[in-house]
Each structure stands twice: as C-alpha cells, then as structure tokens.
Image (cartoon, rainbow, N blue to C red):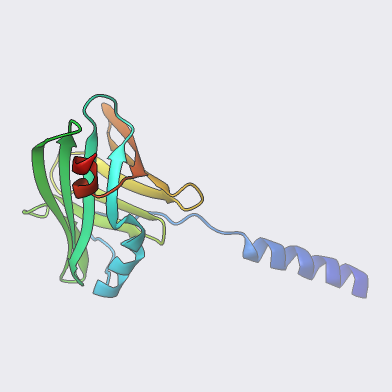
Amino acid sequence: MTKHLFIILSILSLSACKEEPVLPGDPNNPPAYSKADLKKLKWIEGNWKSDVGGQGFYQQYAFPTDSTLEILSYQFDGKDTSANTITTLYWSNQHLYMGPNKEWVGVLLTDNALQLSPTRAGWHTINWTYDKEKGTWTAVHKRPDFIRTLKMIRQAPLGELQQK
C-alpha cells in the first residue's frame, strides 16, 4: 500500500512541475503590469541586426527611463545610416503600449517573451522571443494574410560599425 501511495504521489508531483504554457491576455482587457515588469525585457537592451540580406536592418534598444523602452531602427550600408525611425514601448496606467497613439498593447510579458496585440483593426501582432542559449531573439509580425519573421543577432554599437 505504501509503495502504491509513493508512486501516485510521485506521478502527481511530476505533473504538478510540468510548465504550463503562458497564454496571452485579451487586448480589449489587457493584463495589468507594473513599471518593474519592464525589467523582464533587459535582455533586449543593446544593438541588434536582423538576418535580412542587403543593407541590413539594425535596431538599438535602450531604457531612457524606468517606464520606457526606446527602439531606434535604421538601415546601415557599412558607412551611412538611412531610414531612421524611433518607436517607444512604454508603461502607462498599468498597461504596456507601443506606438505614439497606443497602436499596440502588451498582452503577454515573460522573462523571455513579449506579445503585443494591435489596438486597430487590420494591424499585425508582434511577438518577441528571446533564445538565451544562442543570445538571439526572434520577432514575428503576424496577421491572417501576412507573416514576417526576423531573427535578431547582437551587434556592435553603430559608432564601432562606422569606424570599420
């Protein structure tokens, strides 16, 4: 009897340890986050280059405040930058938003992922997933008729690239 009880308890404890997938929240009623939750994205801070060919698509991520992640996107031809844009991910009223008019809202934030849902019809979702072992991350932009996946690789700061 004790042997059977031990086996049953072992099976129950193993199933209790199984990691359940974290599901995103509802964009119409997004999950509440604190400013401190933004620290989960510290892995993205720095300079990145996409795996897209050609001139290359670069991004720099920085936390100018405890409630803001600033994203500078640009192309770099080895000498000059072009097509510069700045996007901001920020905490406001217990939620995470991206874009100057809250075009996206955070519906999932973990230590290695962020999912943003559009607040406007027809726009795409944005998913960032960090691979800690490889030190890379993937951005997936998706809507029913469109999927774009970018693998981001850590890169030297722009100043160092321009000196080469």
